[in-house]
Image (cartoon, rainbow, N blue to C red; front, top):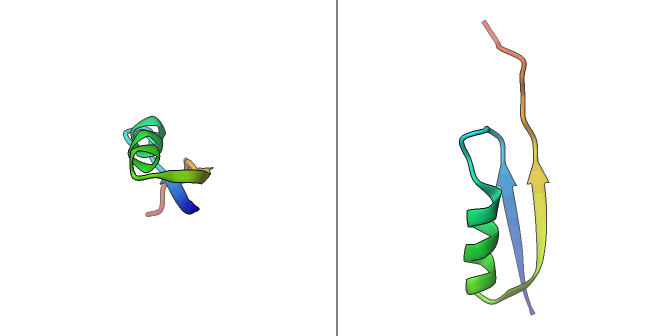
Length: 42
């Protein structure tokens, strides 16, 4: 069984596209992570 991992960290990234690509690659179990950082470092 293939296992996949998808992660987005900005609003511009697309989790759905990553999930689709992992499914097409044969992943049966996919872990997802969404982590948006709103803090601006100076």
